[in-house]
Length: 349
Ligand code: TYM
Image (cartoon, rainbow, N blue to C red; front, side):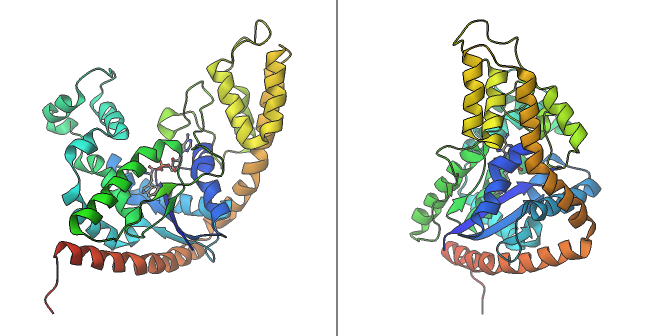
C-alpha cells in the first residue's frame, strides 16, 4: 500500500477550508492507503502561541479528526512532538536547505510582512527582515517551516500528501529536498511526494467575505463546530453583488465564491441550476444562501455532535495518540538511522 501522510497545525478549531482541503480526504483515503495523520504542534510554535491555548488546540483538533471519521484502527493518528525523530532529522535536513529558497517561499514572505507590519508588496522584504529591530524579529523557526514540513513527510517516506492548494509550494520544496538529498549522498531514500485530490485540481475554499481564501487569520471562517444559528447567520451575511443586470453577465468574485462553496457541499447539478438562474437573471441570492446553509449543516452537524462527546473523553484521546506515536516512531526511527548513516553521523559501537 502507498503511504499517505498529512497534518494540520494546532492553531484553533477547523474550518471548511481545512475540511475540504484536507480532513475530508483523510477520511476517504484511510481504507485504501497506509495513512498517517498528525497534529502539527511544533509548526504552531512559529507564531509563539499561548502555551495553554496550544495544548487545548491539539486536544480539540484530535477530537475533530475523530469526530469527522478518521478511524484509529485504520489510520495512525499522532502528535508531531511525540515523535522526537522529526526534530533530529529537521536539524540534519537543514544542512541541505538554502536560506534564499526559504526566504522566497510565499507563505514566509506573507507572514514576515505581517509580523513586521509591512502592507506594501513592493517593499524589499529581505532588507526589512535583516534590518528589523530585535524585538520585531522574524523568527528562524518561521523561515525553516518548510524544512520541518518536508521532514514530516520524508521521515515516513510518504507518497501522497492530501493538502489544500495553499500548501502546494511547500510540497514542491519537499520534492526538491528529497531529490537533492538522494543525489548528494547517492542514495534512494526518499520518494517524491504528491498532493492528492479526488477531482482534477487542488482545493481552495474561498471566504464568505468576497476574499479568495477561507483562513483563520482572515477571520472569515465557517467552523465545523459552529452551532446551527451561528452558521446560518454567517452564510446569510455572505457578500454578494446587486445581481446580474443583463442576461449572460460575467459572474462577480463574491458570487463565484458562493458557487465554489455550493459545488463542494451540494454538488455540480445544484451549482448548474444557480448558474443558469444567474445567466437568465432569475437568481435569488437568499435562496442560494439558504440552500448552502442547509447543505453545510448536513456535513457539519454530525461532526459537531460527535465532537462534543469525544472531546470530553480525555482518556480515549490519550490512548489514541499514545498508540499512534508508537506506530509513527517505528518508521521514523528507521528513516532517521538511514539518514544519519548516509550523512556519516555514526555512533561508535
Ligand atoms: P494548515 O494547518 O494551515 O492547514 C491544514 C490543511 O487545511 C488546508 N486548508 C485549505 N484548503 C483549501 N482551502 C482553504 N481555504 C484552506 N485553508 C486551509 C491546508 O492546505 C492544509 O492541507 N503546513 C501545513 C501543516 C503541515 C503539513 C505537514 C501538511 C505540517 N507538516 C506535512 C502536510 C504534510 C499547514 O500549515 O496547514
